[in-house]
Image 1 (cartoon, helix red, strand yellow):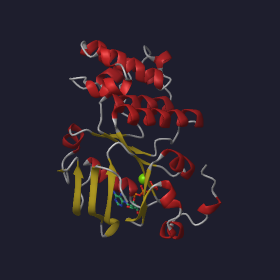
Image 2: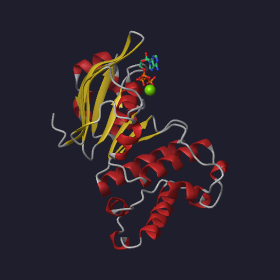
Image 3: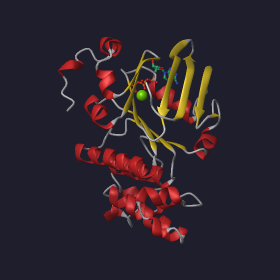
Amino acid sequence: MSIGIPILEIANVTKSFKGWRAVCGASFDVGRGSITALIGPNGAGKTTMFDMIAGFSRPDSGQIRLARHNITGLPPHRIARRGLVRSFQFPRVLAGMTVLENVLLAAPRQTGEHLLSMLARPRLARDREALAHIAAKEFLRLFGLNAWSDEFAGTLSGGQRRLLGMAQVLMTEPEIVLLDEPLTGIGPGLAADIFDIIASARQQSMTTFLFIEHNLDVVMRRADEIVVMVEGRVIGAGTPEAITSNSQVIDAYMGDMRKWDFQ
Ligand SMILES: Nc1ncnc2c1ncn2[C@@H]1O[C@H](COP(=O)(O)OP(=O)(O)OP(=O)(O)O)[C@@H](O)[C@H]1O
Ligand SMILES: [Mg+2]
């Protein structure tokens, strides 16, 4: 399988909790600029894997590399500084600040070309503060939050907070974004929007997205690579087409998958 240049390389990673092996010898790569789904049944070890990648827990053994740097066991802030951002199911939103201010807070000190290309507005490069403002407004528009721009963030609904959290994540100009079940608690209309925004961020700036998702219909339509975990192991990886015809994956996880219509 070829996934181009890997931005993330997971090699033989193992993690146990009190003797229970949540992840056992898992290996996979994530291609730079890919939209990769990590799927598998409940308890397969997906979130545990995300925790280790983002530095929230330390693998017992194995290695994790980000852009060829060994990041195994580094603390989260050092991994974040290398451009890996994880979105939270319940993002930390400052309720007493406006929605716009919350997005601006996430802007890097040096708003750079990455963000410019993401928004395809290269001529605005000069004034960084103005640029951050424009970028924040643009993200709020993309996420359907512009009408709330000057409201206190505390007034947003749970679903809107999730969207604000996503806007904050993209505002940091990440190299790679980890999303754990990003559609939970978001209605179907907005769910489609989120993946449209992901697709355009990838296209404009080569941002990589690795997401955990149980909805196979979404996975098959939106991911260009899929990694399948079952009982702590990676049992298959490849394009949606390759995964749907992988007999090991079908046997272990997607038994009745052939009846799906993924067109
Ligand atoms: N902090 C912890 N302490 C003890 N056991 C844990 C801990 N975190 C996870 N586990 C166990 O490790 C296994 C893998 O859990 P994990 O949350 O990674 O699965 P998952 O693939 O994300 O599942 P789901 O799809 O339900 O979110 C499970 O058996 C879980 O109970
Ligand atoms: Mg999970």
